[in-house]
View 1 (cartoon, rainbow, N blue to C red):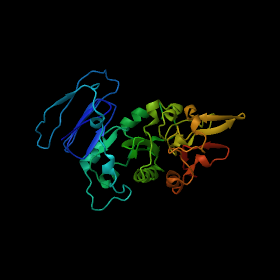
View 2: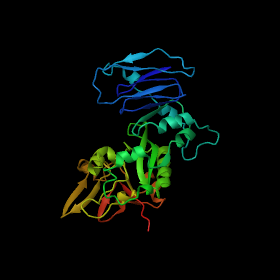
View 3: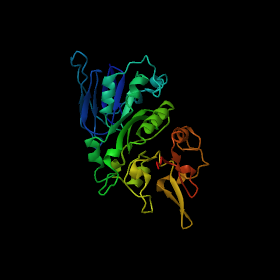
View 4: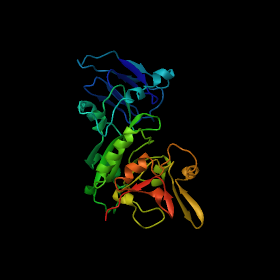
Length: 322
């Protein structure tokens, strides 16, 4: 049995292969994989004692451990190094035919909120590949979107949109759960692209619905949030954006800002991305022509805002259908 403390003040007791950690919500997760995970709301008052139990396969209870979030722990005990286990993971694009999919783990991951971290001790590519999924918009997701990204008067039919869940590497090198709402016309492309990026360990800081930012595109960009559907106009115009159809996606927007000239003055959004408008400076989070993410989108018929002439939207990929 491993006893692990994460930096959100959560204790995770684990025997087997994958640990899921999140800084949102208050709930326990149980599965036949012999572990329980409690997700703690980060706004919870400090000093509250958190209790967790591990349930083994025979349903015999192990001793209960109690910890206090502010208790100082040594750095070694606060982290789970899953990167070593991922080195020989294989490809989620083309998993080995000999690998067996762990359906219980897939279900657990699919039931876990986006932005959560997957800590891997041992895993196979076939199991993680199944965690890249496409759904019609679930009721719970629509409830998040209503009067936000899916605003009153939205002319995009909900039936044309899809909810996509993917796995991605974060800036911390760990595996995160990401979510997007996209048009059904590009949903399979998006899953295939993010599988390629996952195999390449391409870093994306976070990927949650823009509704988590009240559909405020600037707030989402300032937080470096990767997102797609948002029923809105092109900034500064009365023309619907391709995001309004779910046909565009912005990736790591803080480090890949939208740069244009208005009345002779350079305008950069998000504003806190101003220092990243200079593309001659080295930055591992820049999207550049012919790099791996550029190629993944372009070969599937997308265009890149960094190729535009009158302005540069370095974060932006879109696919237009006649």
